[in-house]
Image 1: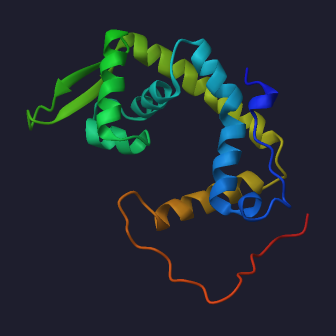
Image 2 (image 1 turned 180 degrees about the vertical axis):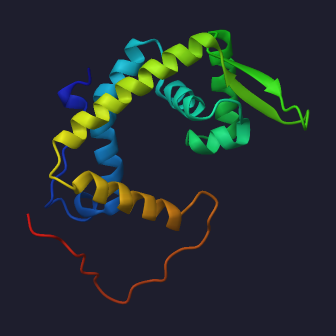
Length: 174
């Protein structure tokens, strides 16, 4: 399990960083993921390997370029991790049937079993997090994150227009 001293504390009065949306997103993800990532490491995997297993559990046989985007990593880094996972017997690579220059990554039976079990455990971990939120908060949060992602999809260089003054964010009564 993650150690308490490794967890980030957010101080609402800490100035810019403590109220910066991107910092809050990253810090919340880090805190919420810590215990599950410790569990992943106990299973003999690194977190990027877990991400690859999860992505392939959704859709086996993905092309390396697509898999790199979904797993949130550079393609060259992903290729090295896939090589390591192939040595562990979790994945295998094959040329695309229609275009031999393209490479697809597939789960082996061992990778499918481990990935499926970890996906189930990740879903249980997510349910435990959601149970600690206020009713409706998880759906609202997921919708907001999907919207942010759609606005800034990978490869999009469109930045929002500068805002002339302070922005008032809507909040709801608790």
